Image (tube, rainbow, N blue to C red; front, side, top):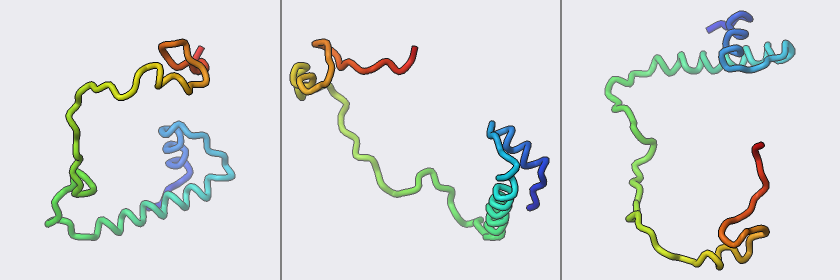
Length: 95
């Protein structure tokens, strides 16, 4: 698939990306390469392949969700760089 400058600018706009003109050629070639590879995948017969819902056959071993006391609040806070007796104190990240 050929990607022209107009389509490249539209994709960049939709993705909310700023694309300098110096990078347009490299990005265009990269996108064309990916799309050409995808078109090769269209040629493969997948009519007898079941769709996947998960990428592995692993099954999660879930534990019962219940509250247990593992350590006391004091033990949990004793090595904290800053604490107020009940909670960890951390720097403010939002104003």
